[in-house]
Length: 289
Ligand SMILES: CC(=O)N[C@H](C=O)[C@@H](O)[C@H](O)[C@H](O)CO
Ligand SMILES: CC(=O)C(=O)O
Image (cartoon, rainbow, N blue to C red; front, top):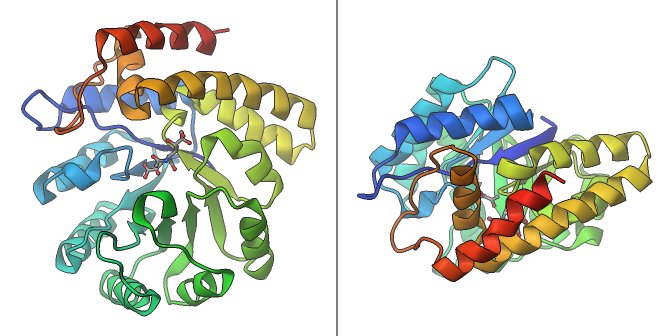
């Protein structure tokens, strides 16, 4: 598994249920216009940690139903409740998802041994390729290269979604585990990560910037660093604006400007204020430049 993978947003109705039509439109946009290599479904960007189990199942089903044969699909199934995570993993496997991914168990300050035991049980019980989702800024779980090595040695673990900014560690990990896949999770740093050995990238901003991301990724493969730098700088101007009002809500707002019904945020996330919308009005113009 390689390349640019969009962390899919979830369009919600005002009552918090999934807006199915909107979701299908967003999936089509990612595949037909952004032409990304795959979709990461049920991650932070999908607001999955705010969803009930039945909605997560529905999300996995609708996306699977809408994609093309060559689209890679990863289901983020991590949940604090291990039984729920296992049920979701089995369901995604049955639906034909190429791989599973799970956030490191969070909130309680679990020891590394507890986290490792969580993945051991999850991978034993689902028996499907697993990508560790590491996001220390959100979860507080920091791993050394040796810790990662122990997780990567578990059966079925094929790689890491590395939502961290330590490039040296990523380089070190790829060198020690060349057969595993490492995805960059910092869209602002796609270029340096691609150079440092990332096999691909999974990110929220690729809903709108997937084309830029592909250009950067391909330019790095061809050692065309001038192009990669120019496009990364373009991308980062957009990301700066996205970050101001909140990445997920700003992405939804821009989709709506494009005539795609990206729906509401899931409570307690809120919509952009009028002031934030004014700021976000710059985004579309920069994207199309
Ligand atoms: C926590 C989170 O959602 N991170 C995303 C994925 O890893 C990124 O795509 C960021 O949203 C992006 O890099 C903007 O800072
Ligand atoms: C991109 C990311 O971190 C997520 O959606 O899970």
